Structures are given as structure tokens and as C-alpha cells.
Amino acid sequence: MEVLNEDGEQVASLTPGKAKGINIVEWNYRLRRPKIAKAKTLSFGGFSTPTVPPGEYTVRLTKGKETYEQQIKLVPDPNSVHSAEERALQHETVMKLYDMNEELAYQVDRIEQLKTGLAQIETSNLPKKLQGRLKAFEEQLEATRKTLVVTTGDNYVASAEPQLREKIAELYSEVAGYLGKPSNAQLEALALRQRELEEAIAGIDELMRQLPKINKQLEQQQQPTLEYRSKENFLMADR
Image (cartoon, rainbow, N blue to C red; front, side, top):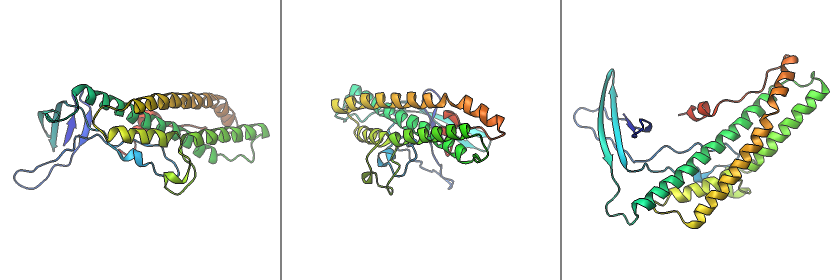
């Protein structure tokens, strides 16, 4: 059983009962948790899940070759103290932060995949100039990674200085945990984190411009080239 929004996108996957008679399937009206960048410590802010907005949804039940669909309308609590405009701004803000969490996770994944590729290259027989280039590239990747995620500690964020991942995830958790209008301070923090993330992505993209020349030299030495997966493949993995 799955729930689709008005654009036909799956927003929930549910497990229907198999007992005889009427089975009740509960939906908590929440999206899946965002992907969070891998790091040395846990990011507790990333455990939050945003609610879906009011609107028309399709519930689709598939049994063997048979498919059954039913439209439902999700409406806000009429006794809510929050106006429709306030709820809309909250959803817009939390989804921006949701996407920022996943974008940062992908950028860290790019770095991790390249570092893994570098570790698999046998450098001892390579020309000294290429050895130096690979070492410098790995150091640049690691230096960048350290500005994005915590690289020390033992699963407790408080044991190390928060980096961009922790700052985005904490703000995301705050906004996701309150269904009313985000505060002015939260909106200002969002703008700041957006700028920081954009700057980080620009820096990583600049690093990636070295790859064509590095890979050409590796090919000439009959060594494996350095690659990373697409964002689409990253987001689909483990889901």
C-alpha cells in the first residue's frame, strides 16, 4: 500500500494487514526522514520527519496483479491555532531544510567515494609528480569534509565542535517540531545556512574540476579512475 500526492509522487509506503475481514492501516501523515551526511557522530536533528501538507492524496493498494485506488482529502485540524498561511510557511521552510540536509549528504558522499577510490590506487610505482598530485587532492578532500561534518568523537555531537551538518540538522529539527510559523531568528538562520551550503558546494565543484586531468593520468598508468555516483542514485540507495 502506498500514498501518492497530487503529482503522483509516493509520500508513504504502508504495510496492509493480511488477516481475514477488515484491516485498519494507520498513516502518520509524515514523510520519510531525510538522508543525513555520514560523520563520526550521530546527528539527532536528522531524526525528525516533516508532515505532508493538506490536499488530495491517492491510496493505492496492490495485491498480485490487481490494483485498487481511493482518493482521500487531508484537511488541517479545524481547531488549530495556526492559520493556513502560517502552516504553509512552516511546511515550505522545513522542506527547504529537508532538501538542504539531503544535498549536504550527497556532497559528503561525493567526497567519501573519491577518498575510497584514492585508497584503492597503488601509488608506489606511480610517477612522483602524480603521487604528489593525488596526495594533495586527498588532503583537499579531507580538509573540505572537516568543514561539513564532525570527524572526531564517539557518536555524541556534543563531544565535538558542530559543523555545517549539525547546524542545518538542528535548525531543521526545530522547525519540523513546531507546526506554526517559524520565528524570525529561524528564518534568518535558514538564509545563513543556505549561503554556507552554496559556498560549500561551489568549493567542492571547484575540487571536482581536477578530476578529468587526474583520471587521464591514472589511465595512462593503467590505474582505476576516480568516480562518484549521481545524486539520484545516492538518494535511491537504501530506500
